[in-house]
Length: 144
Ligand SMILES: [Zn+2]
Ligand SMILES: [Zn+2]
Image 1: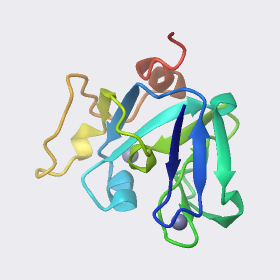
Image 2: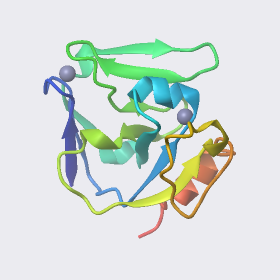
Image 3: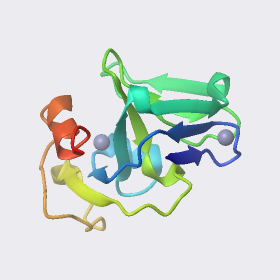
Image 4: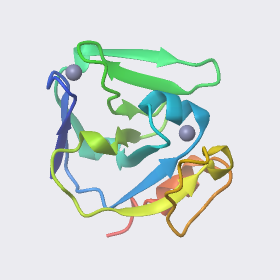
């Protein structure tokens, strides 16, 4: 089990499984979303993800291209968002409560990284994940 919440605690969620891998994305959208050089996120199976509180307080902003930022309307924290038409939930890593032992599965959009953003793991990808399936595999969501 794992749990997480936004800055003000209005939005809270739990996970039936403890995530083991995360990824970094260095694209301009993720930079602007987070205010830093890259996001840190993971995915969970929708069946393993549960809202505990505050789902009704979530606002959503969407770019025509599909990029989406769901956030707490009270405090502005970016919160998990269920993927469209796919049984996965995207989870921003910093919201998790416990100090979990997680491994970076890959850095994406490294061609878009700022020169001051130098952190990389051994799996570097110049562009975005080629598919959701690729990312799910990289995060080893189906491994035991
Ligand atoms: Zn909040
Ligand atoms: Zn990105």
